[in-house]
Length: 171
Image (cartoon, rainbow, N blue to C red; front, side):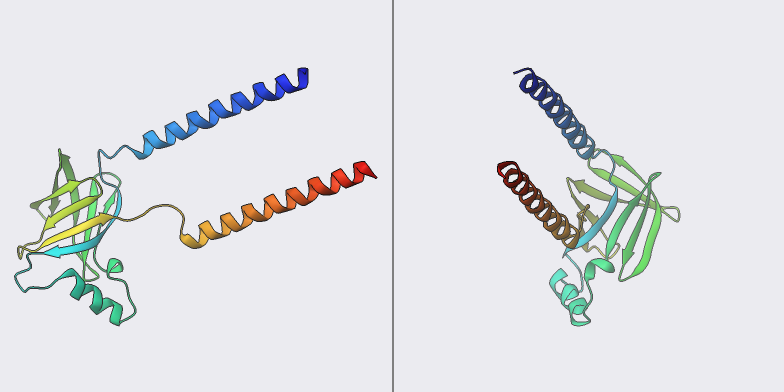
């Protein structure tokens, strides 16, 4: 009975620590006061030439490339940003945020973009609206598959070890 109580207390403490760590992690992830990381091109509207996102995307796919490698905004530490269009750095400078408006300043010129959650809409000088979405962060699919496969293997090995110990005790 005493061992069971110690086990239960240890398990409860572990559970509280785990929940606390998860809540802290979620709180850290929820802080979206400033954009950070890459935002990939996800749409184009109002282009005077009539160019659409689908047309641009097909052009890159025809070359076995991804449009998101050539069209993106990246927000760096220290309030800096880079805008890459067609694989060329179109602008780079600083940004500030006031509500849902990002003011991008590069080479002495300022322009605004609207941020809404994980989406940024930037009006290019031609009048076209470029819509960028936050790039996924974290582990790649391949890494997740390896982690899951490894976890399943460890569970199977542990199960086999438990069965082996039980058989030894019976013998």
